Image 1 (spheres, rainbow, N blue to C red):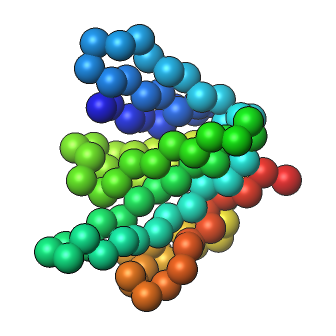
Image 2: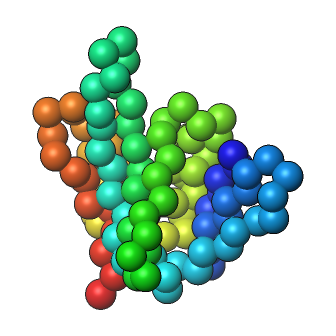
Length: 102
């Protein structure tokens, strides 16, 4: 799966299927959390959409750092200092709110 962040939208592409574009206006909340997978801890970015669906990607995706960089660059009205908090997040913390639609 290819996941990328653009100026006005997210793009999801899975194998040979058509791209799915999700406009920022269709995203209600973006947050980060971690889960314990016994041998490792995975971090997840979750995008709650205004029509009730959630899209999640974990930090094992090939372009994770680029996604995080682009979120910081393009995400409207983001929470202050979320990127610094993300670096120090712990499995014992709940969810890190990155964005919530006003």
